[in-house]
Length: 391
Image (cartoon, rainbow, N blue to C red):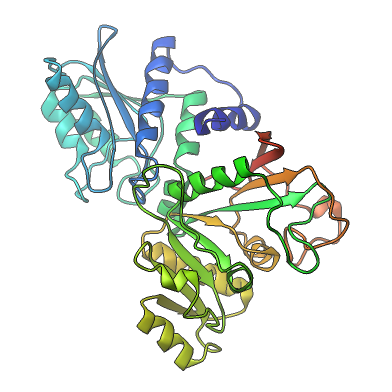
């Protein structure tokens, strides 16, 4: 199922269906969301943004934010107008995220909008970052541009598409999506730890596509030692940027001969250790090999939070968590699981390792309810997806 359709189905569950101003508005905002997807896996930590410029019902130009450091969607749409021989003066700009008014990797989009003579701007979603948060729309209104924030399902879809950006903007920490494969009786591995392969080939291919869209893939040292994974995106065509690999390894046990260390030329490697417990010689050896070792303090939950803060400082806005029950449980206990993507395979193990090994709840009523939930077929497997947080 395409991500936009998945978001739409989850949106239908979590909000009421409210109409935007007109049917035409909805059509153009939906097109903005389609265009925005062209930046997926290419623009992080920036947001996905699409723009459409319309006058008298005719589309004059379109654009999207295509790569980190490249022109923003509004500027791309204005340029597209002129490539087509159209001037955007007195037109309507539809945009999936509010225009920026600050200097970053690019100049303010408000300047380009005003210079183009745009008469009206219709915005699907706010920008929660401190530098934005209403400044752009305010400047446009002050200069006589009509500005409207849309309502309805396209608004929620725009926010859902940018959940990594929204969490990162608000907290400085990456969005965390837990991926796992389970038997129908709920085990992620046998009691001995064997887990290859619970899910089918189609599901494993889908995971590689998710890796290509993520800033980082994270595991615990147990998984790194047992499976010796690469954690790169493979067999998915051209990958704009391989995800960074992250290992939560309190005592720096990751072997120098591991595939993760041996593939540093393909993608960065971050090893998050207990600053007080990791032996200095092991830390030094990993650093000499080219890994970035990040020392954090505290217990397992505190180390998760501190590790995410450090990764956020390195502009990692999304993590695909592929670790075992211990690490997943620590993330859950820390309140840092945002989304779930769980493959249920048509098999029974009878006993084995659970999805989460955390503190747990004593009563069912205390269990954490998902905000939204959906499922689909993935080859022979059942893929369940849900949201625990909304940013």
